Length: 95
Image (cartoon, rainbow, N blue to C red; front, top):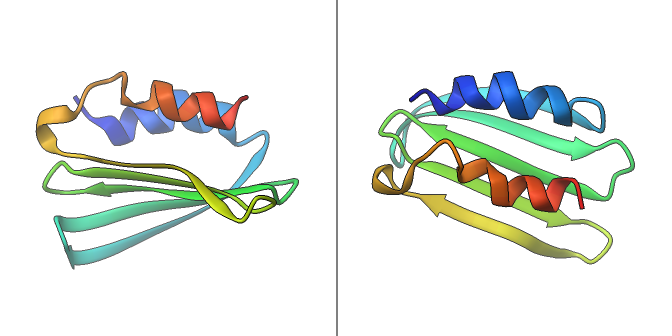
């Protein structure tokens, strides 16, 4: 299961209508090489990032700028990964 591909093919097409994205790549991070997707809503209310590590860890952060607080944060270990891990995150994005 390639979760980056799932993100690119299912989540990103929905989000790109309402969010701007910046993609970056870092080597030798905490859990291997890191592919990061930073995003911000076009209305400037939400910012966040999705981190995909080569050692199969995924971290998702979401901050509500108006509230000034983190409203979602999850670090998924390789044992927790499934194609459904984005469902909870999408609930915050599209509420």
